[in-house]
Length: 69
Image (cartoon, rainbow, N blue to C red; front, side):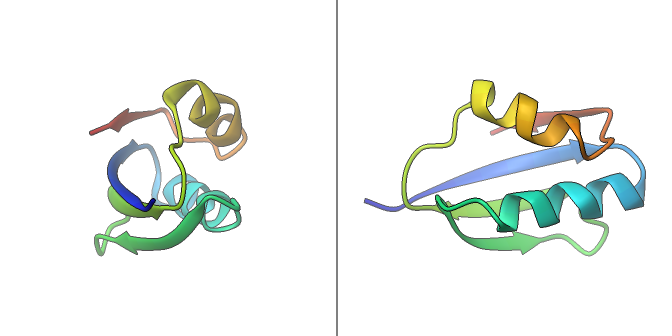
């Protein structure tokens, strides 16, 4: 079953771009729709992606924080 989640990213444009690329390469992410400045990502997921899974994944991107809506 597919689900949608919104992710707000905080950090530099380069770190937000890296976070988007990391998310696009995850097997449970089917689609990523992004705002022009990449501060908001809408994710179409095949299975749930939890905050505890996102923290280590996005740690390498250099973002200063995120909010899962």
